[in-house]
Image (cartoon, rainbow, N blue to C red; front, side, top):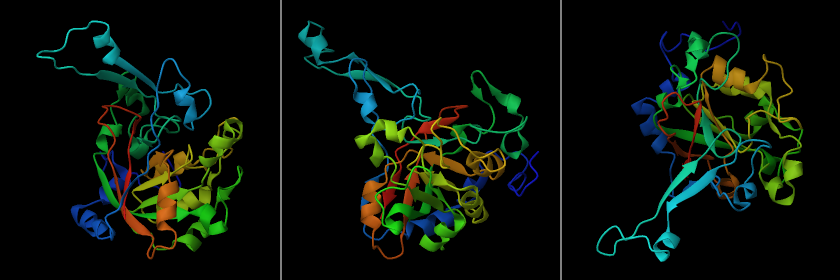
Amino acid sequence: MVTEPNNWGRFGPDDQRGTLNLLTPATVLTALTSAATGQVISLAMPIRGATSSAAPTTVPHLRGRPLPQHFMSVDGGDYAAGTRPVGAGLRLADDAVIVTHHGTTTHMDALCHMWSGEELYNGHPAARVRSYGATRCGIETVGGVVARAVLFDVPRHLGLDHLPVDFRVSAGLLREIHDDVRPGDVAVVRTGWPLVWDSSPEEYWSGQPGLSAGAGRWLASRDVAVVASDNAAIGGLNARQLADEGLEDDLHMILLWRHGVHLAEMLWLEELGAACAGRAGGDFVFVAAPLRIEGGTGSPINPLAIL
């Protein structure tokens, strides 16, 4: 059982959704008023998969993770080789995509993704995470997320293209950028780190900037529903692609495990950052829905920002 401040039991003994419970119908309707122009921006990186080309390696990802695979079960070449049309000349293409989302593409972590000891978030037994999936706190419990969001464009605030590899964003810096964070909000943190990939994958793999433990606790104290970032782990990573912080200060432990705050990682925030630069208010509508993978530890998502 956790001992530091947490949300265990706050939403009932059986709760599996954490601070997503704060997204009541009234809160969602209020969030929709954050849209002013109707401009829609996708915050997802592309999923590029192939078995015979380097396409997947052109998208930022963590070293050693299984890359997306995209297979065509029937395509134009099959018909050229003599495959019969479906009927009356009708042809179709069909495909299958395999994505291991953690570390490879834009995704949301479920509350069953990480824990300490023998209990998941809210005291659910960790033994309920089985070989066929998690029977508690799986990604299917999320549903859809429609919320007010605020962008913390940290490098733009500091006059940088991207943060240095060892930079940890403090709570004070978050407050300096945007102090109006409300219960049920989505906190979107731009580090700019994906820009490094095009110049050097090796530099991308040398570590990553991210939130400090203090920043995570500050966001949790503001009752955010989701924390999203363009880095791979919300917190920072070292050259071994691991967090340097101990369990007490690990961002996944603070947010996912203790406070039931879902995490969205590896977003693409460059267009959003440019669109929000100098924009009054700095808030917008955030929309995302993970796939209903029963017992899933996470899911690919295509988050949308509506300005």
